[in-house]
Every structure is written in structure tokens, then in C-alpha cells.
Image (tube, rainbow, N blue to C red; front, side):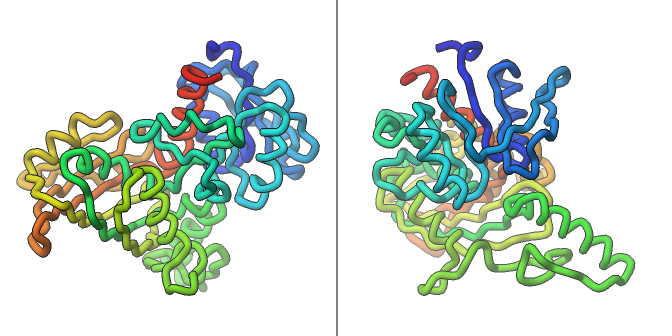
Amino acid sequence: MKKQNVKIAVVGATGNVGQAMLGVLEEHGFPATNITAIASERSAGQSLSYGENHTLAVKPLANFDFSGYDLALFSPGGEVSAEYAPKAAAAGCVVIDNTSHFRMDADVPLVVPEINAAALKDFAKRRIVANPNCSTIQLVMALKPLHDLAPIKRVVVSTYQSVSGAGKEAMDELFHQTRGVLVNDALEHNCFVKPIAFNVIPQIDVFRDDGYTKEEWKMAVETQKIMGAPIQVTATCVRVPVFIGHAVAANIEFDSDVSVTKARQKLRAFPGIRVVDDIEDYQFTTPIECAGDDDVYVSRIRQDKTVPHGLSLWIVADNIRKGAALNAVQIAELLIKDYL
């Protein structure tokens, strides 16, 4: 099936990730005539740009007929996906869902194409494929080539996650709070439990009974499912006053020795990874430098001397692109190439 013949619906098209999905589809050569933008009733009729010369009129999701569509890229929120993704699948459409709702279902593949593309062979069980959590994607992208060198036993993770992961309103909140601090206005906060401007908040998603947040739990269980290995992950996920780009500090414990030199070589050779690591010349990557880029950047590769076989890494990526939209489009392209 060629790209010119594939009909794609983008659900949640007016959100951060939805608009990025449209942008990546256009960059990858999918024609505007075969793309339909879908969102809530309040966004119906809105025009969205598709490339330089096309606009798409947003259609309402309620009662939308997915018959005749090959693929649907969903990013409307978990409750909406829970209701409408099965309906789209029942109409013969293959759904690639960016929410967390289906990720841990045993019969739904959870896919990062560079790592476990073979899992897509099971897509027909539900006709739903799950896109992993944004921070999990960039973590496992760095873990996979190293796990191939020596099995990974345990990873201690600290994340520094931008506000774009919480949506457009969260980005607006950071903007207005930052301006408010500078002019000494009172800081109102609706998206986060505390002010985010000039602050960090050690809570992403709801708290669980074990004291971890749901975001931290996602990183642990999704890593195991994607990697197909019993890697133990403990995470602390933190929201930081950055607009776009997540960073992850990872301390990795292997079951045998992995040298820094071999780790660099393996990471450099892995598709989608870019190593920027020269401390003598202050070469390391920050979120502002990766915004708009498709690669996952790895820096600060060094020995962790607190365990017998350990490495420490700094991993940065654009959470809207590889952390969401790009990964979903890569899944779509694999489905088109190998299965549809």
C-alpha cells in the first residue's frame, strides 16, 4: 500500500501532539487529500494548516464514521480513546493510540519501532497499537543498544519533564506565571498543584497507594514490556519550567562490565540516537537544543562507581516529536509497509 492510497484520521488534531502528528505526516509525504483532522465538537470547523499550501477543516469526533480509513492516530485523552478507539477499530481502521489507556493490555502491542517493531505482528488482535509514554520512549531508546552489550538489571531514573507534556493550557500557564513573577503579580495555577514558573514540581500524574505517581509507574512497567526483559526501574518524575523537551538522568546497572568506550560506540550506531558528549568542550545537549528535532540525544556518558557494573547517562528528546507524534507515524509507516 503506497502513502498516496492510505486514508488517515488524526483524532485530537487541535492539541499539541495532534498538530505535531499532522506536521510529521506532511513531512513524510502523506498527501493532504487523504488526511482528516478530528477533534471535539467545540473545535469542529476550525482550519488547521497542512504543509504550506493546504488546510484541513476539523470534523467532530462524535458519530464520525471511520469506515474506509486505514489508520487513525489518536491523541485526545485517555477517556476519549477508551470510548472511540474500539469503535474505530470495529469499523476496520487500525488505531495508533498515544494515550496510556491501552498500553498495558496484554493483547495490545506497545511499540518503539527501533526496538520492538516485531511486536506489530499482533496488531490484528484488537486493531489497536499503543504509543508509549514520552519519557519511556527516550529512556528505552538509550537502554536498548546498551542492553545488547550486557543485560541490564536495574535503572534509577530522574526525569525533568517540560510543561508541553501536560498540554497547551500548561504551556500558557508557564508563560503567564513567568510574566507575572517579573511584574510582581499573584501567581494563579490551574494545571499544576503548585506554581511552575521558576519552580520544579515532583509530581506528574496522580499518586498511587505505593507513593509513586502513575507517571513513575508507567516508566517502570512500559520499559519491561517494550524491552521484553525484567529490568527493574525506579523513577522520580519532575515537572520543570521548560516549554518543550524532556530530559532523563539514568543510572544503569548491568550484570557484567560495560565500558564507556563500548557504550558510546553502540549508542552512536543505533538509529535515532545522537551522541553529544565531550565535557572538555562543554558538549552536552539541553532541551532547548533538541526542540523540533527527531533524534534522542545522549550525553554525560560515564562510569557509575557506586555499583560493580554501572553507567550514568543524560538523555534528552523533544517529547512532542519522538516522544509522541514521530513515534506514532513511524508505527503507521511500518504497518503500511509490512502488514496492511
